[in-house]
Length: 246
View 1: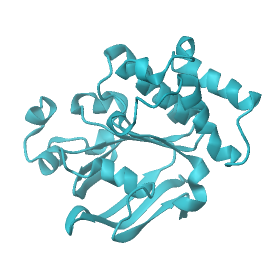
View 2 (view 1 turned 135 degrees about the vertical axis):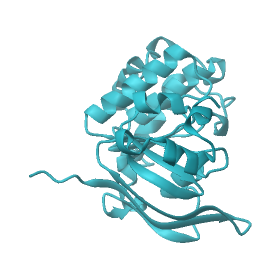
View 3 (view 1 turned 90 degrees about the vertical axis):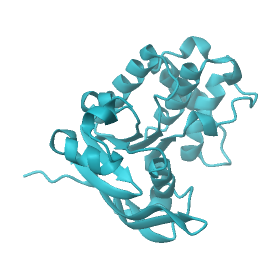
View 4 (view 1 turned 60 degrees about the vertical axis):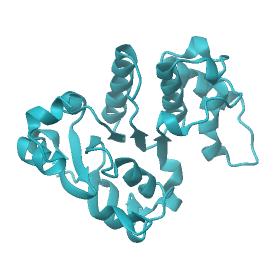
C-alpha cells in the first residue's frame, strides 16, 4: 500500500491589508506530485496565497509547512516564478545571467556559479526554447520570451515544489503550449506544481488538481471531482457558462 505525501500544508492562514482580510482562515493540503491551479476572481487573494506560503507576505495568523517543516527550513526545495509585472525588466542583464541566478540558493552567497552551474543553466534555456537568446538582454525580449527565461531560472533550481504566478499571462499560444508541456513533465517527474491561473476553459486540459479561492477557500481537490457548476458559482457568483467566457 502506498501513501501520498503532503507537499504543502496550510493551516488557519489569514492575511489582511489595513485590517481588511485578503485571505481568511485558509486550510489547504496539496499532495505531492500534482499540477494544481488556483482559480478565483480578481481580488480573490490568489497571488497573496502563494506569497504568504513563501514568506514574502507575513500572515496575521496561521502556519505553513513544506514537507512537514517550516518554509525557512525547506527553501531549497522550492522554485518560484513571479508575475511578469513584478519584475524590473530594464535591469541590465542577459538571459543566461538571469537563469544562473537560480543556482545561487544551492551555492550560498560566498561561492560563485562555475562551469557546472553554467552548463545546467544552458540546458534549462534549451529546455524552454531560449538557448539562442542566452546573450540577449532581458529588456530586449518579448513578454513570452521573458516568461520562458524565468521558467528556466526556476527549472535550474531542480526544486521539488514550483509556485508560478500567472505564467501564461501575456504570452502567445506557442509559448503557452511550451510552458504547459514543461509543467506536465515536472509533474511526471514527481514534482508538485502550483499555478495561479485565470483561464477557466483550460483548467480541465492543463491541470489534475484545482483550488477555488475567493478570500476563503471554496474547494480543493481533483479537477474531475470538483471542477463543476456548483463550485464555480460559489467562487464567482455566476454560473459556469458565464464564468468560462469571462
